[in-house]
Length: 114
Ligand code: 5GP
Ligand code: ZN
Image (cartoon, helix red, strand yellow):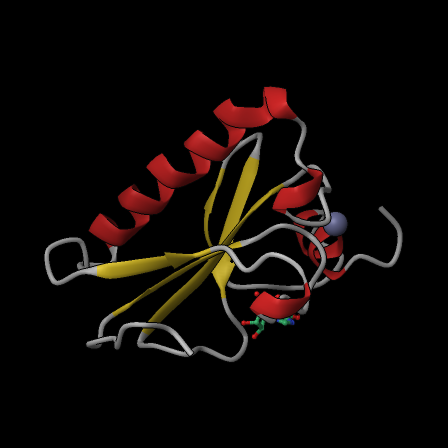
């Protein structure tokens, strides 16, 4: 996908601090972290948001969650706790239209979210 920031990161055209990668997904540090641990996890294939992921891509979404859990363990926040956020479309505040899961932890978070 041309002119997509996260496609460019996935293709290594724009640098990022990568924490995990396999053939299907990439995890990298958020450039403006909102918590001591703030990692973005994306599929390498372009989908603008959850609204655009085909029904048969459930395995891919599940794979992202299982790897998010592994990254949380590796970062030492699995026991203290973490939050996975998937902003979708306008009201959520989604800014980058390549689906990405936020993995946030390392501090106490409030509920409900703003
Ligand atoms: P959204 O609001 O779309 O859910 O989240 C987009 C996230 O991408 C934000 O947390 C923002 O800090 C992050 N971000 C935006 N541009 C870049 C970038 O060029 N590199 C990295 N690593 N993160 C970015
Ligand atoms: Zn993209």
